[in-house]
Image 1 (cartoon, chains in turn yellow, purple):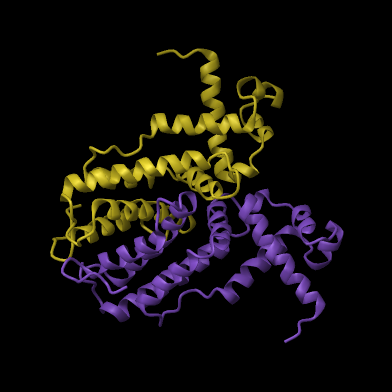
Image 2: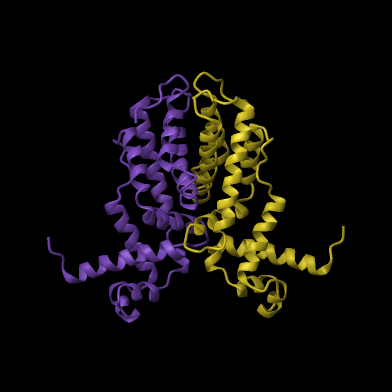
Length: 191
Length: 191
């Protein structure tokens, strides 16, 4: 499918935004740096996105389109595949880990996005776990309790991995967590 | 003990820095904002800390002094107390969660601090778990494997809690994780 020229340009600008945020965070990013990366003047960039916040909002919307929140009908092993996939794209993980970190500061424009996203993600994780285990996991935890921990483990591992990829194998560590959910008597999961 | 006036002033400046970073992140923080909060001119502030980075380095050193990394001789239940304590000081947690997030961006001055800190924290967590469980946890995980997950859970829960304190009970969730480590057959831990 051929995209209109304007749309191509927008996509190019969003890719550049992703990179600039990975390098400097959102608060450190400037419209000038994004413009420079795509060979536009700052005035030219404002034609596509009138403010820096508009750029961020477009980037977050784009993420929701391409990078679906794990659905409530996913199987547990698909979550491992998602973590494996993330381990192959440090740039994207870096951008969103930086944004998540910044989002807890006052009046950050990504704060609502993350707050709403986590409500949905926790709910979906609980559904996935309920399908796998019913109302109680082997440990006695409810799917909701374990779902909150699962989201925390995924996020927390990303920071450790981004800081020290030689020391932390994010995929293996996430499988360890799934094994922990299985309980003491389970076989090690097949890999 | 009476502290010299200069030292008091430095402590006051560091408290203001903590607040400004909680509000705006490190990249969004300015020396002007810190100076204003303590009633100094920017020139006056530079007398105590010559650069913004020097302020950050002093803040991180201060943290290591007051807010010890959990030691390798801690018992597991002290970790719960640490999480309970953190739940009572959202400002400090907010500052360090924002800094951790920013630290994964390029050439961030807190990156080395966090990278080194995590090596030590993961090692200490593994020691605590080894003392509690020996070479294998009930799930079959090694203390090192479980230690990495424990650090991830603590960090990940902090983001969910900061974004949505009504929805996420960080202390209860961390106890759920300790219960998960106990394995399927264990009683719920005494609280």
